[in-house]
Length: 460
Image 1: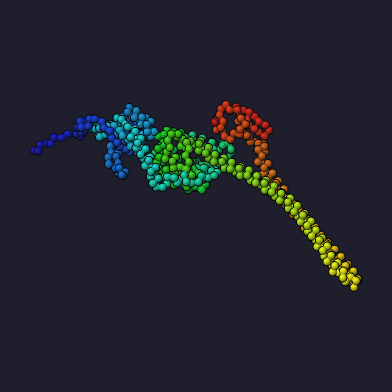
Image 2: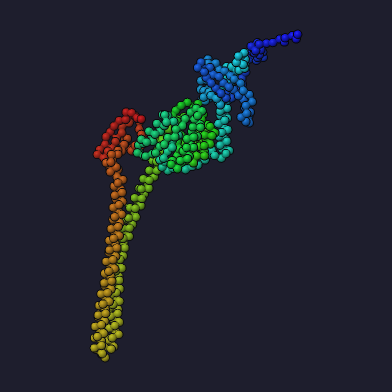
């Protein structure tokens, strides 16, 4: 009968492996890996799946489980996020100190004891520069900046969360502006942080693209939040969509220190949603000021031209009178000359045929009288026609002057005040924006029927 071979139970074998690993790897090791999956249980323990990929592809060449026990995780996580301003989450590359563990029931795993956040910070910076360089190499980095900003942007597509405080600040600032400008705002809802933020914002951009003729520009805003929440705005695909968009895109992501790549590729980047609203209002105010300057110039030119026309009309009237007098004098001279000629011509035959001379004399007088009456009538008609034309011209010019006078009266500040508007002064200086006023300032508010002085106690 054959001898039964010596055997080990599975537990005994795993225990041997555990002992062997503990003897072979007694120390802790620093490793570099990428978090592919992450799960935090109710006890606060963090369970990770760490992977390593080929340098030139996404192929995974190594994979293992790792654990950060709750006590350690409560210290490592805030330390990591405060240094990197990046959420500790899947998809980032980390440098951690680990000990090698083997459990009879759960098998091989790593126990994370420490972390080096500066490595992740450097990796994030490297990825950021790679994305910027890629957009530059593809020739799209400045495409959105090259679009012309509408002179008066009024139809605005907004990408934001409908519950974000920044969205409320933006709409309140824009719709309740001091100039009374009218804007059309349409919200395209999107998540502004987390893993779903990038596809959500891209989807909103694609929706706007399909109806882009309805809008003048696009605004991407979010209110506040941690720096770590900004990671989605450094995404290549989101930034690529911004560069390719046919409308100017303005960003007001609500951060003071860092610029995201989305800020860099957008047409105009501003710090806060309120700043974006102020920028849009200022664009419209600048155009209104330009129109006012054109109106003033037009009024000046029209006044000068009207005076020129008046002077020309007066000069023409004087010239016509002179011409008429010269014409009458010339005709009189012609008649006299003709009379002298006739008299000299007939003088030699006067004795021969007195009767004939008398007849000719009568005819000459009649002819001369007829010619004189005809020329006199002609000159009278010319004078009446000219006087009528001058009268009509003066009447037309008076109507033009009246129209300009009506237009100037409509723009009269006193008339505007009677409609219920007011003008605010501080120290005699016209105030056009609340940002020029501070709590405690003494201001004067002018209505159509008087002024009131007041002191600013609160400013919103």
